[in-house]
Image (spheres, helix red, strand yellow):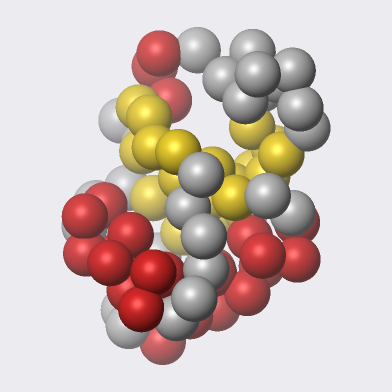
Length: 74
C-alpha cells in the first residue's frame, strides 16, 4: 500500500522526489485526484515506507506538504 503526499505543483513534486532520493527514500511523482484536493489539480509523491521521515525531510527543505493519505482511500 502506497502513501500519498500532496504537493502544489509538479515542480515541487520533482524537487521533493530528488531530495528524498538523496536520503534513501524511494518515491514516485503522481497526479493527485481532484476529489482529494478540493477540486484543485495537484501533484504529489507515492511513498512506500518511511512516510513520517519523508514529510519531516521535505519540511526541513522548505517544501510545503499540503496533505497525506493512503492510496486506497481514493
